[in-house]
Length: 315
Image (cartoon, rainbow, N blue to C red; front, side, top):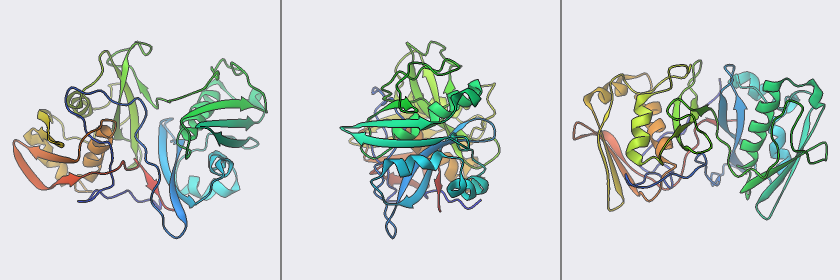
């Protein structure tokens, strides 16, 4: 797999990261406005699925373009995308024979999906809509998404999927293990390891009350739900000793078990990145300290200015 992850270093690009223990999170997955430029290319995030059916955000390096249709066609299962799909093991949500077009006006992305919907299963239908909406919300300038199908607005698709937008957020990989009332609960976005790869998977875990920073990290340490195939990136038994925010500096202190994460093959970087991405839905933090039993570990102090991508791929 030709893939590389963003390294977290002293000046890691992370914005809107951590909030005090009394704040509430935004209700959309963290994303950035794609400031990275290398020889006329930018990083743009798309939503695919893996072999286990989990929704995977993938930042691909693409040619800089103002054409949202060209970006949305990265979700097609056709020749221009086959190499990327083969190398990553990801699956495109638009089956062969389907096409997509898009335009962004006044903050709304209007996306038209063309194809024979009668050929799709219930699962394919739901996956297609979730990936298209999730990707559309990450188009430059888009704050909401409205869908049309073969040029026509409809309320429900063949298998009953509700497509009566506009959509202003899209929860990926919903987890109701803590609170099953999605309509009244509040999601906190956590990042776990994919079962058959080194990808990070965002999970929207619904809680009864709006989560604080400490609650979010505690839920991250708790790991995936029992019926999930995802992997916790924390050593077993890791808990938070305390979490506080003072003068823009957030300090998260873990129990001694956290040290063994540094002995993982990647030096604990995936575990640390899961912390940063989980915290990215909170705001008002300039710097974060990670500690163990009150003692700072080497290279556990970062300035943060913008959000990083969960999974970054080269082209």
